Image (tube, rainbow, N blue to C red):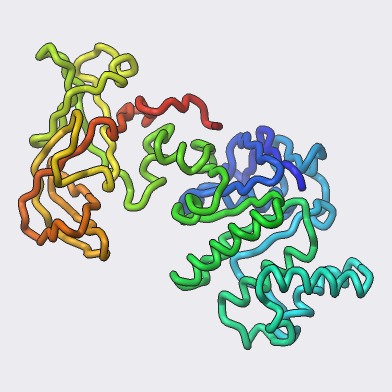
Length: 372
C-alpha cells in the first residue's frame, strides 16, 4: 500500500493546459475519487499516476519515491480501464493470469492468486469461459480480477462502470466498495458521475478546467461546498441558484431576489456579506430542502406554479416556475402534486447557501481552502 502525492503537477498539450498546478495528497489505503465534467483533467491526472502521460512540471510521488521518470511497469500500480480490454481468445483464468505469466511468477503462485481473486469476485464458476460468454458485469469483474492478482500498492480505475446498464452500475459500484474495504489498498477512481463519487469515495476531489476546486469527504462537499461550481456539481438534482441583492436600507438586512423572493439575512452571513447594501450575491438551495408543509424555525416562503411532476414512488420531483426561474423541488409523493397546481414553497434559512456573484466563493462554508 502507498500514498500518492501530486506536488504542483502541471500537464500541457502544446498550448492547452490540461492540469494546472495540482496539489493533492492521497492517503495510504484511501478511496479517492476524482470527479468533474468532461475535459476537467481527471483522467489526465490518473494517467500521470499510471505513467501513461508525461508530466510537464512538478513532482508525482508514489510512497516516498518520485516517479516522474519511472516506467509504468515499475510503479507497482494496476489499472482498470473504461473498456474491459480482455483477450477474446483466452479464458477468464488465462486473462487474469496473463500479466503474472509475463512476470514469470511460479505457476503455483499464479494459480493461488487467480483462485483467491476469483473467490473475492464470485468468478469461480466462470474461470473456463471466454469473454464472449460473459455478461457486461461479469467482464468488468474479470478486468477487476486481472488487477487484483497483481497485488499492487495502488489501484487506478478510469470510469470502469460507464459501459454497464443502470442496475449493474449500482451492483458493481457496491462490489468495488466492498473490495476496497476488504483489501485496504489505495484506490484512485475517476468518474464524471457524482452519484458514484458520493457513494464510493472516502474523499472526493472535484476538478474543473484543469483546476482542483475542493477536496473533502462526501458530507463536507454536500454540506459545505467551497464555491458555486462544487455546490452545483455535487448533489442530484443540482442545487437551485437565484441572483439576489443584499439590502440593508430598511433596517433589517435582507436578501432580495426576483419576483416575490425575499429573505432576512441569516446571522451567520452577516460578517462575510459585510455592510455594503446593493452587493450582488447568489443564493443556493437544494431541491430536497424545499418543503410544501410548514416548517419550524426561520424560513423564506415564496409561491410557484408546478409545470412538470416526475413521480418517483416515495417522492415527487417537481419543476416549478418560481421567482422567475425553473426551480426544482423534491417532496413526499403523498402531496400528489399535479401540473398547474399553485404551490407555496418553504425553505428553512438554515439550509440556504450564499455565494459571491463575481468570484463564486461560498459565504456559507467553513471551508476556506481547496483541500480539506
